Image (cartoon, rainbow, N blue to C red; front, side, top):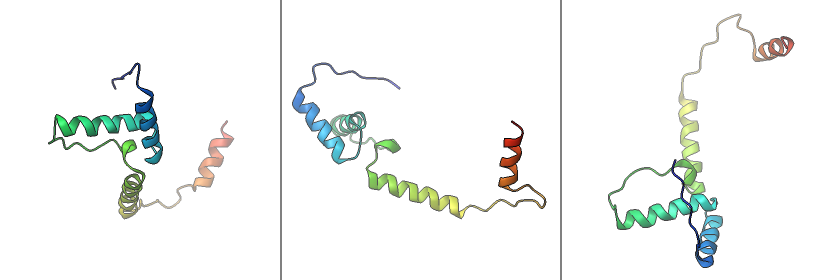
Length: 99
């Protein structure tokens, strides 16, 4: 992933970025990416429709995304465990004893 370094960033811009990041529960780096995307795509590419990175979503959006994933996992068919298959406790004990 490319990196960007900004020199001589005005203090007021940095302070606003840091304040916004704190309000959105993001790191300053994450907030800078979000702000750049919002600003650039409004001006240069209004038809941009890509999904934002998961770590850049607002906390409520991340929570909703997690809930959707958990619902899909819970809806999956549970695996059939064959008779005589060792229990997790037995497997862990065997692994510990082998050391």
